[in-house]
Length: 231
Image (cartoon, rainbow, N blue to C red):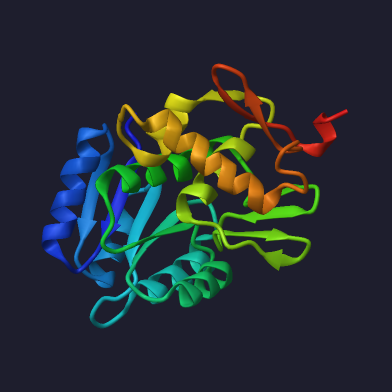
């Protein structure tokens, strides 16, 4: 059965675009242009994911999210659409219980990749926090902490680190990493992945030249090795 997604946004054009794009991916998609309309949909259908705009007239996305978590718990993932500052987003995400957010304007390939990642986490019961050594990834706040201090990662660095860390011990090809993170094919894709991995190692590894966590699988790609698996 197709996963059911509810898109809540007061921009009708955006709702229709997302509905068409997600329907092409095999999802069942409903839309609502306001929070009251969203509640009507939520009372009719058990959705697998809610895509929710923050800034709407009247009741906004935060109002809906706060009430939804209070009344219906944490069983359904929520992705926020936002144009407000990252600091506000991080605070609200942690406090209210959203699972991810996308900043407008966004690319459809990135948006669809995020949708798949959130659904996969819920299906696999992957924890919100991934801890390895002195590093902690918090997916809700989309932050990485090292020795208690936030690491300033670019978006693609964060996405590659998270994808690898979700599957410790699993070798992932450069092509698969590029397609998952950048969302398309490119003759320079492997080089792009290598450069991003290099800068990521500089930021999280104690010895980037002899990495403890992000291991190279020669001629193929990369593998994440958690400390407990490094003996």
